Length: 267
Image 1 (cartoon, helix red, strand yellow):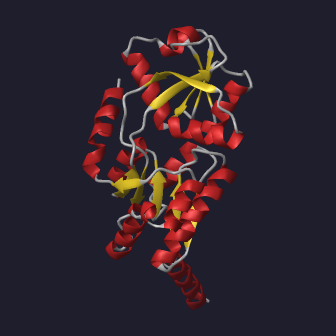
Image 2 (cartoon, helix red, strand yellow):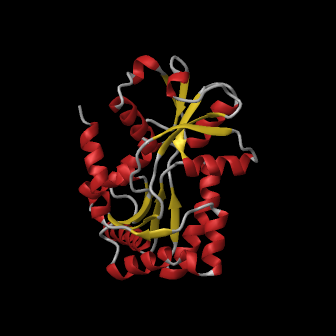
Image 3 (cartoon, one colour):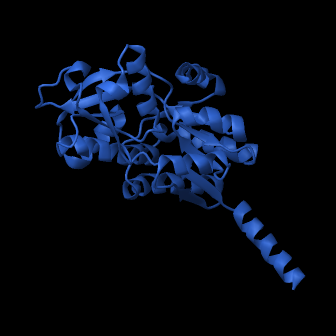
């Protein structure tokens, strides 16, 4: 019996080693996330010759917990999460979005709101509290002298799409989000209803990271493919379908500015 148990455990370990768990942070509805990133997983699977299993969680905090436990061999994460994941698990950055990330506050074009003071005492929808854009926006506003919790009612949302929908439905005066999320939402809903009334200073954008347990050869194959997505018709089609930006090489030092931002956030 003991031999059978040990054999079963060994089999599970071998199965786990023969696949690559690919975690994506839940920045859009789960069905849409799978539609976009299943294609990414399949593309990378063809390059490394082993199954790439797409994984995510319904909520940011759940995903971040699994990331910090080192569950994923490959992950697509937001910049603020990289700092802690690198410190706890040694995740290695390999590619980041080619444009920097800004948090934006948007309202309906049809509204009379033109700046932050116009939405004082109003409900402000936001991406989840753990989202980079939420933390960037609230920190920036506090730095400019706004008493955020006194001046606004923050309504945190499950993801960017829910946040933007609250503005469309009149449940909130504004939404704290990102330009790419707003663009994706507009294209999905076939609308062009928002205007930006505030934006923060930029930080390096979302990135792909690989766990140190992934062999260097595999890591280099994945990195090369991601960086070359814009160089062939198949890659360009995948980027277009997922409304993804091109990616550039990422290094740990790129995120020193994020570390400085996180130190600035501390009381």
